[in-house]
Length: 265
Image (tube, rainbow, N blue to C red):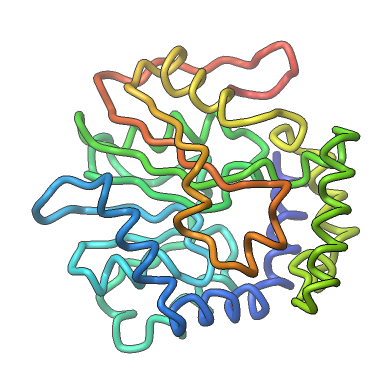
């Protein structure tokens, strides 16, 4: 795992400042309120201890801390954590920032009421192991909220490739910033070809792992993108709509084993 993990860390170190600007835009334009309303639909009332996995530049950690929750935010990339602390400003001292591998959490069992993540699972070498870890640190009855998409699936699916190219044309015709071409596409595509999730149509896989292999109550919402994305995101990512996988921890976490594709699931 070390070689790919280092490559992923190097990529996101280079992307930290640019990605931080995206989060700053969300915080400044009211998207944080849209996201908070969506998240709160799935949370119980009262004080909650929340883990933000793969916090990046801190978007979820900041908006949830503003809302009064006790937030711990982890990321493997130190540069992302530095951006998150800067974006949090005076709130930084109230957020428990830690550098940590999402696939190997350094927290005790049953420590959090909620685990939340956005655009992380697809970028992991062992996503099944990550899911087992996230459920492990949840209290019984605790909830996982994972917002993700089939990022870079167009590398392995010709129909998705056509839809992806249509997105690029749409963005150009609308005179919008292209969220793909302003990044190091070659580096990201190289990583995507080495990790398992870009090859798999989701969220069916996530539901299977969380429900059938880990024994949790699971729902998938494939329309969440309609509620949380702004018009620019919808134009950029029309071929890759965001979904939400929501799971409630029902009991003990089952062991995960390598599957026939050779990765842990």
